[in-house]
Image (cartoon, rainbow, N blue to C red; front, side, top):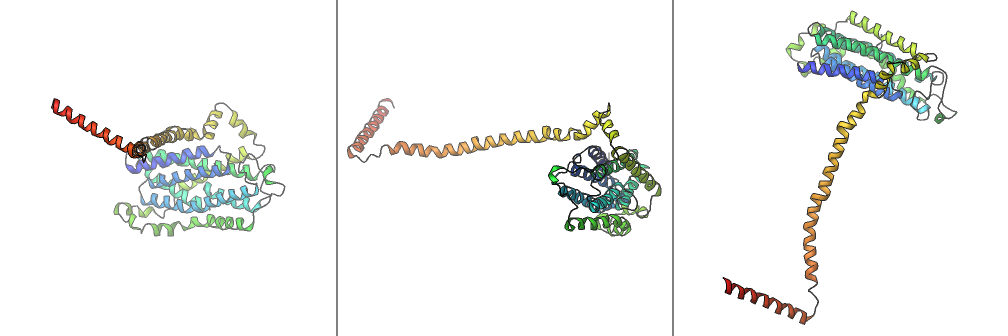
Amino acid sequence: LEARTVVACIGGFTALLAGLIAITQTDLKRVLAYSTISQLGYMFLALGTGSVVGIVAGMFHLFTHAFFKALLFLGAGSVMHAMGGVIDMRRFSGLRRLMPWTCGTFLIGCLALSGVYPFAGFWSKDAVLASVHEQAHHHHTFAILYYAGLFTAFLTAVYTFRAFFLTFFGSEEIPAEAGHHAHESPVAMVGPLCVLAFFATIVGFWHHPFADFLVRTPSLAIEPMRASLANLHAFHGDVAAVSTIVAFSGIAVAAFFFLGDRKEAAWLARAWPLRYCYSLSYGKFFLDHAYMLLIVLPLWAFAKLLYFADRFVVDGLVDFCGHIPVAVGRCLRTMQTGLVHYYASFMVLGFLIMAGVLLLKSMFF
């Protein structure tokens, strides 16, 4: 495999795996966190194509993603502020009347993340999928990655609007932590949401200026990549149409399961064998457990071993060397009594020992 193909495969796998995890999470910020991981996978999927179109698409998706994902995270923070610190979507619902500004701006962020026209995510996600689709004509691996990207786009729309419907639709439920005065966030919090919502709507139209700026950088000034500049400003209508259908399909699925009484979603989570898939996704495919078992615990044990070696072997040896003069000094200090006859006795004893040694030496040597 080429290095770029490995990068693309890792990106596609990351995007798909994180999307599968996000679709069952109940913590609103956790949904957005795994969504961020998934979108980062999208970016590396585009970079892995190795074409100038893919690199510009990946960087442009990073650019647009900054606006609508910041909008969604700040929107989640606004909800968290109003709910008294609670962010578990199972404990609140129906907030659209209570928080209309947060609801409206959050909806714009959801539409942008899902890739709905004309919001920013539509243009950058279309560019990513188009760059992969372009390589699919030459490499079967990229054909697989293209369909994986489409399925990830479907998952993105599902988990994004799942979070939106669970939070802002349904019967109005407020957690006890919010008290009886839950209300819309202040202007200091809603204002940035409106600014980000505005940019999440329009920055997608900056694709051409962004691409023209990026291709002039020295890192892209190589001849093989400049050969594909003709496709840089092309609008891939077929890819855009497919991705739009996929996005609206995901929104429709989310609406079917998470609007109304949501009995279908509860049944789906309990039905065999889907409940095992649900548990696998909700448990994050046990990646946290594997990380803890294979990386954290071995490193912790190794750190404890190094601590023992440093504390009791290295420091112990140094301390032992320091204690030797102290012990010798204590022994010699017992001889310092201040009595003259005591010193004279030691002198006589020393003289006798030396005389004995000399006598033995003369007798045997």
